[in-house]
Each structure stands twice: as C-alpha cells, then as structure tokens.
Amino acid sequence: MSDAQRAVHDRIASGPRGGTRGPLALWLWRPELAERAQHLGRYCRYETSLPPRLSELAILVTARAWSAEYEWQAHKAIALEAGLAPQVVDAIRDGREPPFTDDTERVVYRFSRALVLERRVADADYAAARERLGDEGLVDLVGVLGYYGLVSMTLNAFEVDPPEGCAPEMG
Image (cartoon, one colour):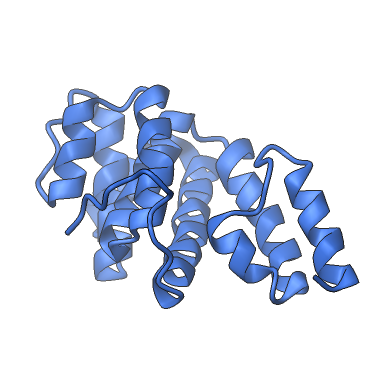
C-alpha cells in the first residue's frame, strides 16, 4: 500500500468497522474516494435518525435490487438482530411482498423499493414516508439508499463474492 492508502486503511480499521472488507478494500485503490465514502458510510450505518431496523430494511431492499450477494450477506444477520422478522427478510430475498405487521416498515419498504427500482416515488408513498419519518428521517432514508447503491454497484462491478462461509442466496 502507498502511504495514503495505509493511512486511510488504518483510520477505517480503527473505527467501528474494524477493517476494510468489501467495497472499502476496493475503494482503497483511490484513497481519496475511500476516505470520503467511509465517512458517508459511517453516517449512513451508525448515525442517521432512522432506527437500525429501518436502515437495515432499506439496505436489504437495495442489496436485493442490485443482487449484491456480499451486501445481502453482510446485512441479513444485522437486520434480523435489529428486529426485522425472518419472513420479511425471506420475502425481500425472494422478490415477494413482505408480510409486514409494522406499518412503518411497510412504508419504508414501499418508498425504498420504488426509488431504487423505479427511480421515482409516487406521491402517496412519499407522503406516507414523510408522515412516518419526518423530513430528517426521509432525507436520511434517501441517503442510506444512495450510499448502499454505491456499495452494491462497487461489489457487482468488481464481482465480489459473498463473505467466506456464506452461500449465495439470490441465485
């Protein structure tokens, strides 16, 4: 590694991630990108106004939309631990409408899926998300979707396999 790469690597590895795996390892080829992306990623993963359950829901929707196996595997267990029901996670993986029992989860799912897949959100879905999340939460949700879109694109462009010991789930 160059001095710049090593410095960025060490800053990332000493933070909550504990290392540079997945897209961060690739971004180190351009330490300036890695530095900036990891700051945004830290915010999107650990510091938004969204409860972890809703952030992880948005991350799984994005990973599924991109069929990004690495990202799916990296966040599936986190999503379950954060409180998403296994049936919801399985339905997202399988491309089915999840059996939500929580209305806010349903709203976040519909908003996320529309924005990621259709590149637009219907007025009713926007209004429902804004009512549930508020302006700050809605901005954070879009930020999470955008950041994990970048993550998923990076993983797919460089054909990053799922973490070791994880079998692909999305076929």
